[in-house]
Image (cartoon, rainbow, N blue to C red; front, top):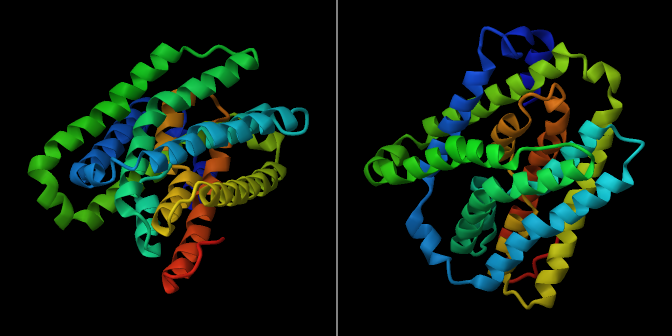
Length: 315
């Protein structure tokens, strides 16, 4: 991610609007490819196994799409006047995103949690995010005097995110064996596509001089706030899981699925929602910091909890 941003800084012209990479076309093609691969990788059978645990599902989705955005709204109000509007929007965008899929499931499995429940919730979150994330952003933008054509955005997201996901899921019937055999290569293509989108996201920011207006202070502020958000959510969800009497397996799934935010969804979605905004790189900065941090801390916690399965799950 850092390399992609540095390349955009050194050589932004190809990925900026009007560049020879034709980012207006490349972006949507990359988004479609990413979600087609996600659809081909999702196991419908695994989702069905975890579908009946409604208390866990309600808990996770409320955390992802209500509790997180509530934090984002507090930040939007509380940071007005000392953070730039684009960074404030980026912090709220982080809070409005759906949960991750692969890392939530992998960390839950490593820690000995409820894997079918994690599969169902991570997948459901991704699908709900196609509609709920732009809805939250529209509410915030309108509250700040901006206009956002929600219908156009949802149609665009449906065409380039949901439709490729559905096509991938349909073709999984014939391509599942091939996809499993080539899982590592599919992962490489998926990550390279995301890095390409990150590159094009930052190109306009450098061409229009967005970063020269703010400097390193925006990175420091974004990093501090992102870390605080993560630990606040983690501890609140842990406390609420205890109050609701979740068993160990459900608690692990709730913590990992409820505290994660997806960069794999966030970057493509931002390209479609904010593609004409020269400050797109600044809007994406919080999720680019939050994403690797959540993986590092999540990995540490998963290994800690896996070592003693009889212990209470605490952060």
